[in-house]
Length: 482
Ligand code: AMP
Ligand code: MG
Image (cartoon, rainbow, N blue to C red; front, side, top):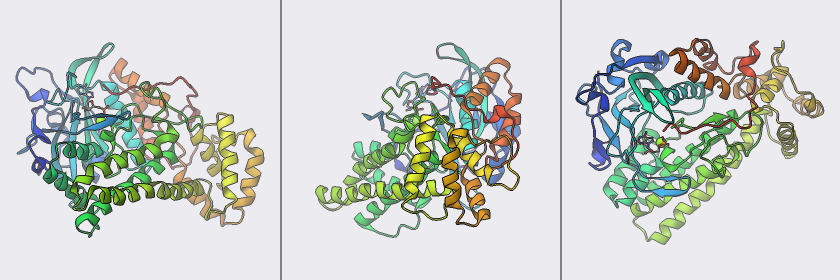
């Protein structure tokens, strides 16, 4: 096994060695592997055996030669700055390189209190761990950039929330844990050496084509991060993902989805949809996500100012230009997204009206986002499947759309649409069902049937209705994993 620690050179305060709870004295509980992602182990060439994984992934044993650490970070939570967050219930147990030499972190969450716990218990209940396992796999299969879940291990201990629940540790594989909040933390410490090193670490991992030097290098870095964020958010909007807690500490500069706390999938189409119980003012509503991503990038920009050699006002001007570019990049990518979802091989000015008419009907008729686009795609197949039906209220719009796409080669249109409009998504009610199965029977036979379907979400075939049905519960609420 070849594991290493790659954050230590960022300083003792940033990367604090800490022993996970299971490895501390007097621990009698027995961790058990509950869920294991075989595909990920093979894809990333992860040097772990399933039979012994529970010991390492619960934090009971350290990975050979590596000290577990908790990382420090700051963060804007719902717009309010918190200078000292950090891994309060997670340990980074080591990094490894895959077959292509790309670095990945293994992080375990729910592994006990750390110096950053701020009075929290450092634990995770089984439900949120299972949610992260299911949702991250589903999003990955939907081609949305994401951190991935290797395993869920039950700890054998109870966790107290509003009730006593079985505890678990979820193991996450991520190309890094470099957050906007990591930069905010080092900027706050006025640690310019650490800040520079962090930027270089991110450039090396994600943006190795950045050749600029000096101040231009910082500008190029911010620009690259903004582009990744634009790409990520467009994917979220394409599949109807609502993250729910887009704080700057939950924003990775590499542009992968992280932290599947209160996330959920959009059902009835409405840009204002919010499921998270703590998002009282809709800051992180479905349609707000692009604005928030841009806002988070502006917080990154602020953290980079100290690295410039020029006067602050000049640095601000250079960075502001990059932030201003965000919305232009987004608008273009967003238009492209709708073009693909509608099977338009090019975008004409008149297409905006066609799209807007469709979205207005979806919104006013409370039509399901996924099922509508799946039905449009399906209707173009040579032998359409009966489980997807075009709603009657769309009939007249459908005629206009048919006329518009008739200009193109139909094989190309259907191919394009079926590659961006999923047939099946992780329905909120079904995720809840899986979690409740685990709580009640410590088992989910349903998940065993469902997961393979979620792993091929663009497969158009006949599905049983319960896989496709929208919850349509406008009161559906999600909670942070705490
Ligand atoms: P999250 O909502 O998961 O992004 O967490 C926000 C912050 O709260 C992070 O610093 C977490 O480490 C911390 N945190 C969340 N839950 C707990 C917990 N049960 N114990 C200690 N810290 C926690
Ligand atoms: Mg977090």
